[in-house]
Amino acid sequence: PHAYFVRKGDDLHWTCVLSEEQAQKGAKLTIPWLDGTLLKLNTRRHYTVDEIKTGDTWVIPNKGMFIRKTGDRGNLIVEFKIENNNDNNIND
Image (cartoon, rainbow, N blue to C red; front, side, top):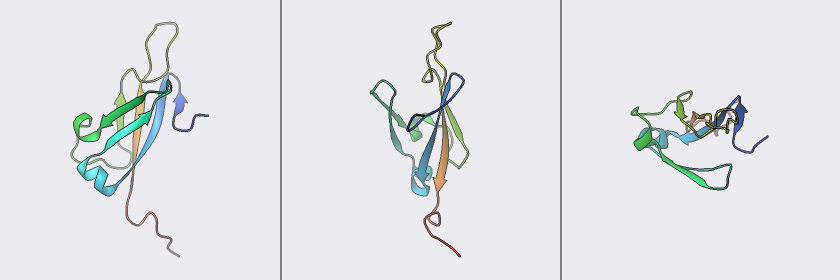
């Protein structure tokens, strides 16, 4: 298994964990890519909603696995998880 990505068919899935502030204001993401390059994304520039919520997904075309038969690539599917301030507290 890969440290960041889960392969599902030709698509790669990545869970992006953001703080509440990042979800509201936007965040710059740097994703270490399979070939060693860095994929840089800005949620404000590339995502079309005002605030990102847990479970929201973002499809980035042609950033998945190489498809030998067609020469195309699958997609990168980013699933967002928002940590609220209480996520780090242990409640009995």
